[in-house]
Image 1 (cartoon, rainbow, N blue to C red):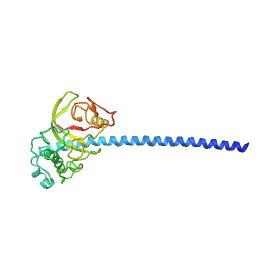
Image 2: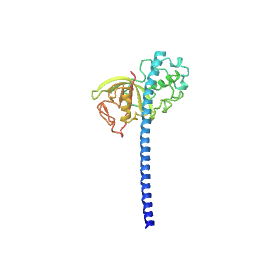
Image 3: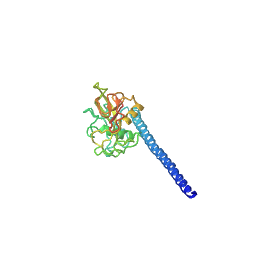
Image 4: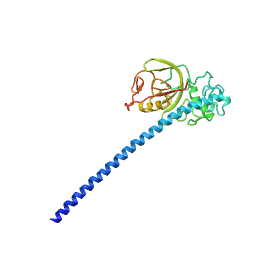
Length: 254
């Protein structure tokens, strides 16, 4: 009898320890999953903060250049004579001095920035580089064969930053208001292709709230081209619960 009692007790003890061990394992798994999710959130927020600093930093560099040379980078008509290293061999060109960066020929919000038309958009980065105001591009890069991270800077989310003038940027929540302006664009498109979306609506909304008014259709920070609704935004609200969609985002300089 005593032997049978001992064997039963041992089985209960073993079963009890197994349940405790399983509980501990489940807690550890939960902590690991929670840590991974929290870590991803922290990384994502750090990237968004970096994009905000990049956009504001490029704008500050543009203004510093204008203060020093009295022209915008890219638009600078005396770049070859006044910027050491701005030569034909480095594909660095003078601008036309008309106080815009790029071309007024087309609405460029989603167009690829053809270097034959938007030469100032590529010289913009070279002028800033030669003025020691930015890094992240290669002086010798050829705009005719653009490479993200060489011809134009890359963002923490990939893709690239571009600068262009748009004579007809449609903004406003369904109002059809038109306003020309100079913009930075963040796009995932390979070099030389039509702008493609890069940020999720939630990422775009977080970035918008950080540097502007949180409205995708008004202010300085805009999402997608035009005032119509799409997967990125609904009227003047980001579709933050739609993780499968992406946004092309724009930051108005002036």
